[in-house]
Image 1 (cartoon, helix red, strand yellow):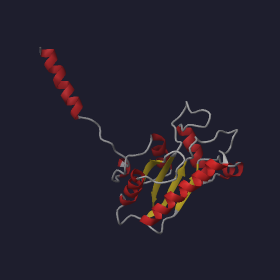
Image 2 (tube, rainbow, N blue to C red):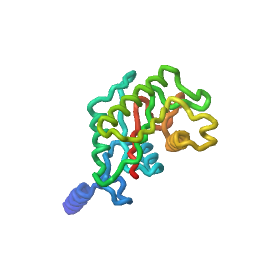
Image 3 (cartoon, rainbow, N blue to C red):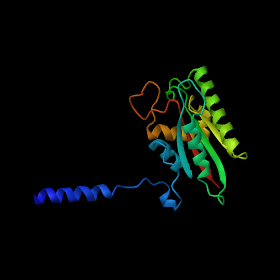
Image 4 (tube, rainbow, N blue to C red):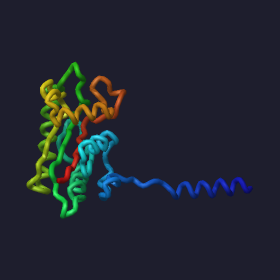
Length: 189
């Protein structure tokens, strides 16, 4: 009987000490929306982003659903009035995973879909705050050799996501799938 009582007491104590979701604690900043994958959070840390979120699209669509709009609004509203937004970085996937080295780019239709999704995200963000510097990155094509050699921001982010373990076309059994998603990072001045 005593063993059962001790076990029950330990169970109650362990359940009451669940860890809390925290982000940006090391910088002493309030936690942003906790709606991003581990790969998105890793990229945001490398880019020194204040907050990051991840949204999803319906297959074949570029429309922002209510949940995606709410996530974007929460991302922007999480910034205090005294803080200034330097840039927003948006990485958007088509309905297929990131292309592999041999393919270099997805079909023209998939590239157009990414541009349409980027346009919808940009337009929505600008309706919230007009003077935003928004960097759009298409995950429907790999960076060119010059971009990789030059060390462009887009090439660096794509390489970082590959290293973090995103799924690559033809190798979907490995890595985290990102098809029909977008990662949005908020960078402060």
